[in-house]
Amino acid sequence: MVVFDKPHALTDVPMHYCPGCTHGIIHRLVAEVIDELGIEGRTIGIAPVGCSVLAYNYFNCDMIEAAHGRAPAVATGVKRADPANHVVFTYQGDGDLASIGMAETVHAAARNENITIIFINNAIYGMTGGQMAPTSLPGQVTQTSPYGRDPKLCGYPIKVCEMLSELEGPEYLERVTVNSVKAVKNAKRAIKKAFQNQLDGKGFSLIEVLSACPTNWGMTPQAALKWIDDKMIPYYPLGVYKDRSEGIVK
Amino acid sequence: MADKVLMKGNEAIAEAAIIAGCRHYFGYPITPQTEVAAYMAKKMPKIGGTFLQAESEIAAINMVYGVASAGCRVMTSSSSPGISLKGEGLSYLAGSDLPALVVNVQRGGPGLGGIQPSQSDYFQATRGGGHGDYHMIVLAPASVQEMAELTVKGFELADKYRMTSMILADGTMGQMMEPVALDLAVAPAPAKPWATTGTGMKRAHNIVNSLSLDPEELERLNLARYERYAEVEANETMYEEYRMEDAEICVAAFGIAARVSKNAINEARKEGIKVGLIRPITLWPFPKAPFKKAAGQVKQFLSVELSMGQMIEDVRLATECRVPVTLVNRVGGMIPSPDQVLEAIRKASKNGGND
Image (cartoon, rainbow over the protein chains, first blue to last red):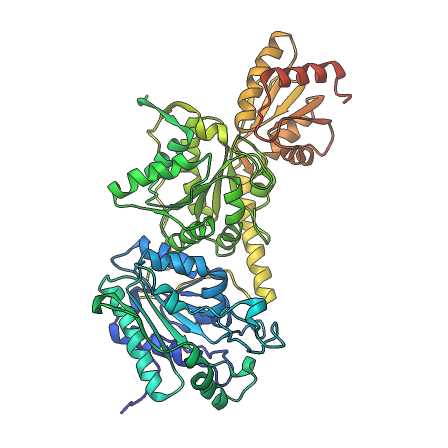
């Protein structure tokens, strides 16, 4: 009896992610949700520029690689091309979504575009080797903030869920993490709801996932998971920031 | 003959796009092309299409990228500064081999420039507009009728060769009104088995992508793309020759500059000066053959442009500098007058090619 198997919505291509990186877990959660909802054949995923740029190789559904930050605009086009059939998700990191692509993010949310966004917040630019991200914490040492992020010089981190929750447009905004079994199960529930909302025509759903980057944080995988608890969650509290259908606006 | 309707050039583009089967338009307001968006905003909701005012030119071209990935005819329009913003997207469309139609109703530049007509985006259009090795098919209408006809042609060529077609008009073409016949023949879009429309669990997943980390593979993709471009050059070059049979002077001009030049040529002919016109309709591919042929016939070329001299470089390349080429121009939103062109023709006639 098979008790554990690879989701059909994931390909057999070996992933390139570093040891201890949580991209693999989140890919799997998205794929499990696609399987469970039976939507692989009509799902189109949009990959970002960043560590998950090669996500188009890992998902079995049709995939598009977007320019840096432009995934919500590309997703808008794909969705509008066949709104009744296409299920569209973007998978974006913090530099992609909250820095270069902020305008596309905010306006897709404001339009309540009927798409699903999986937002990976690991507080750093991973692929280019660990530069300061729009979500890097005050004091965080990175390649481009070698003395620690000084808000007086480079401003404060952007809290995406909090910011978007001020908009009338979006349907559903939740922040989760994947640094424990319990957290992973909770993240899957949120991701599934974000896809179900799209199937129900409810509109824009964004799940922010606090994610670990041991390589660029300079930590062991275990220490990185703990850093999420100790440093990231206090700054980026978990929870539902908006759920229009449930009447929740934090 | 079909009944004609009086339309602005910008409106003719929009109506022709709908006739061509385009049901998705994304744009951002900018003068002097705003009528395209206004027309689409009225029409698209009534025919089950998409009109969306994007948050920026950058977003608009990426929405185009999304619809094109899904295999539907799609367009955006803008004017010079907005086209610069679309440059990134144009490069990605080329890198992903996606068909789309982009309209540039040019205005004076650089920078914010002005809002009056210009042809100073010729280099940008014919050399690609964004980063990397690529071309767009660049179509230059010289009447409102051609605004409509070349829009249809643009969609057909984009689909046929999986590349972007650009209508390179100027503010005059966008704003002027002329009678248009809209009984346009449209070739149906070809099958697009590469499109990301969902696998339907019946095929391997399609990937629309311009990333290729293996340099050998990326080289192969570039070479294959240029083989396709060679086909376009061989099959799709368009131009008009006017009174060239016995010409000793050849005017090169496109768009509004060609209209002005025809007036000047007709006046010069009355004075006994043997002058004709070659009007490129495709700016890329550039009609090299008629210019090469004319270089063996005429003593002098005049390149009449609303720029500081951009097409003139292609005229010199096509004629291999065998005959002098002189620039006749106005810039910044100014248009050469027939008298200015006539004077240049008279001067060329007296010089006999000794510029």
